Every structure is written in C-alpha cells, then in structure tokens.
Image 1 (cartoon, rainbow, N blue to C red):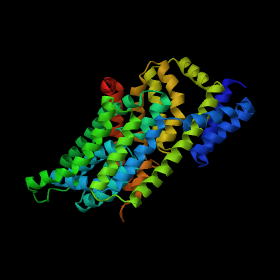
Image 2 (cartoon, one colour; image 1 turned 120 degrees about the vertical axis):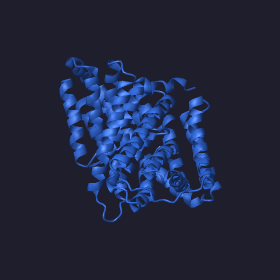
Image 3 (cartoon, one colour; image 1 turned 90 degrees about the horizontal axis):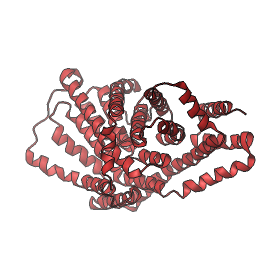
Image 4 (tube, helix red, strand yellow; image 1 turned 30 degrees about the vertical axis):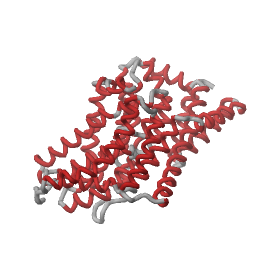
Length: 435
C-alpha cells in the first residue's frame, strides 16, 4: 500500500471515529490496533505494549498528578476566596476594577495550580455574582472570566506545558519558564482592553459607587497574598534556579499546599480524600490518552506516514510561516472539540518534525501551541471554558451572552499569538537563564 494512501486512511479513520463521540483514548488505541493488524504485521502489536510500559515508567509525567493534587487541595483551602476579597478592596473603586482584579487572581491561580477548570469555575462562583450585582455588562463578565481562566494553559506550572515538553522531548524546566512572559503579556492585554471598555464604552461598566476603604485595611488584607506568593516562589523559584526538577518542584508544591491548608484550619482527611479522587480521575484520563496517542504515533511513523507528510509539505514550496499559520489554525479548531492533552499527544509528533525541518525553535513553537489552544478553549460553540462557565451561570443569563463576550478576547489572544510569533526572543530569552 502506498504511503499516501496510508496517510489518508490514518487521518480519515481518526476523523471519522472522533465524530462518533467515542473517548479519544479509545479512538487512538483502537485505531492503532486495527491498523497494525491489517496494514502492518500482527506481531507488531508488541510495539503498543512497549508504549504502555514507556508511559508508565515516565518520571517526567509524575509531575502531572502532583500539580493536579496541589490544585485540588488549594481549591478547598479558601485561599482563592481570600484573594478575591483582597482584589475587591484594592481595585473596587477603579472603573472596571473587579474585572481587572479577576484577571490578576487568574494569573495567581495559574501560577499556583495551572488548572484551567479550577480558575474558570472558581471565578464563575465568586466573581460573576458580584460583578453582575454591580451592573457590569454580562457579556464582558463572561468573556473576562473565560479568557483569564485559560491563562493556566500558559503560565507555569502548566500541566499542558509538561505534557508538551515530554512529547516533544525538550527541557520541561525551560518550557515552563518560557510561558511566563507571554502569560503576563496576555494578562496585560486583557487589562488594557477592560480599561478601554470601562472609559470609552461606559454603558458596559458601572460608575464608581463604592465607599472608600482605609489604607490600613488594604494593607492588612495583603496578608492573604503571603501563602500564594510563598507557593509560587517555592515551585517556580526552585525550577528557575535549578535547585529542583519540575517533578521535585511539584512535590514541594503539594507539601506547601497541605501546610497552607493546615495554617488556615481547612485541612482534613475529607479534603485530602476529595483532592485525591479528583487527581486520580484526571490523571487516569491523561494517561489513557497518552498511551493511545503514543501507540498511534508509533504506528503512524512505522508505516511511513510521518516521512510522507513532511515530504508533501516540503514539496509545496511555500513560506514556512504560512505552514506555521495553518498548524495554528488546526490547533484552534481542535481546541473547540478536544481537551488540550489529547491535542498535544495527537498533533505534536506530527507537527514537530515539520517545525524542525523549517528550523523553528521547539520551545518557541510550544508557546505558540499553548496560545493557540487557549483560543480554541474559548471559541464558540464548543470551547471547553464555555462549558466550565455554563455550570455557574445565574438564572436569566444564557450562553448567547457568553459567546458574545468571548469574541473580543479571542481577538486579543490572536494578537498575542502574532506578537509572540513576530518576536521569538520574547519567548526564548528567559529560558536561557534556567539553572
């Protein structure tokens, strides 16, 4: 069978099976088994078995359940509620201040946990009712929460970044640190947009009607920032200085989250049990997808699909940045219907040889990857963040307002993507200092 036909069968079969709604882990694993038996050699099934063992023995992937466990404990410790109260005191009188405070909290949450679902749902429960009570435009509220909540895809410690680094076989520490500057860039763009709307579209943001807060109370409230700051320094600082690997830093983060919960008198066996069960569920899903994707990629490469695809792209004789743009569009589309781990494990092994052939930096490409997935995460009608937020919507607020709210933020994310693509040094300079 010709390599071109094999390429069509593998991608066509994958597309058809995903449209059936089957879990992606079973789609990848089942299709790999079927193609191995029919197109290759039944004895080659041993390759799939080896991929399972390779996944289960990966020390780098051990960081994933640790960061998820840390997020689960912090989510139940009351730290996020205290942060929101602090932002309300400091930014409450600024026009658009609650929305700006929400963005800042999402940055802090991303730096503590790296879990998108936790940020979006927490802000949906805490920030949305208060902003709506203060007469903020519902679409602006929804768009702010959805977009800011996805910063955990980019800002370390990001689970997505770890999985990308493992799959692309690049430094996890450098990949994590590379997301800091683009993450801050995105948050800054969001804040500038909120300020623009607040002062030039005043109907969307209420006029100041909040009583002044004494500076003494504001300064006292800053105590709530101490625990998040310590956790961020422990995790990111140990990676940046080379004191600990990302996996070891994740373990430090879990211990820090437990100590923070104890200090706030929120820790209990029930909290640890609930966080552990949540970690088990999410990690199991990630590992099943990883096993299926590794098997699919092994068969795809073994049958000559990867070489054929690279050859076809080289023969196109187009500007490398055109190919890069096409890859980003594919990622944005996939982000509307697949979770980020599935996207990475499915596409990185296919895209990375193309990236290397064009001489692009893999770390820089990984950041563009993350921003593209962020765009997909809030893209109507099936972006994941939209459905995270849907569960927290009050009565009388429909998904139509959410869709209208995220459109401007999608444009801001694409702007950040273009900036990072045009100025690679913005992404690559900080990882050079990693110990």
